[in-house]
Length: 169
Image (cartoon, rainbow, N blue to C red; front, side, top):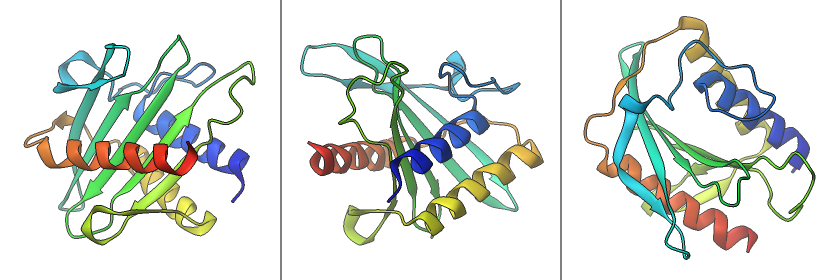
């Protein structure tokens, strides 16, 4: 895997969704709008809690559900993303944006879901496929809607975050 390439792919995907990272041009719309905040929070050992956003959209008669968790701590932007389409593997991405090069141990990751809730890191080919799909969302400029029934995508996102932590810690 090429961590720098993975990081750039994730940054581009986050840009497509309007995720607020330093140095990224904001889209006209953003998943991080207050109306998309879910009733769930991501909790940390120190008791801090951050927001989780969720949207859905219809693309070619397929419902796509997207959930984003703010995993930031100590002022360093850090986000986990899940993109789920019914009857297809889910993709997830994790990126810690540290502009000063600290915490080099925090690696970017793109993964896809397997059976029974397990995950596998994506090859560069699968990362490019994910990027292509997200770019298509931006090209057709589909409007985000509030996520209905967020429980399952939320659970998948938490499962992915646990996979990420087990892999790199």
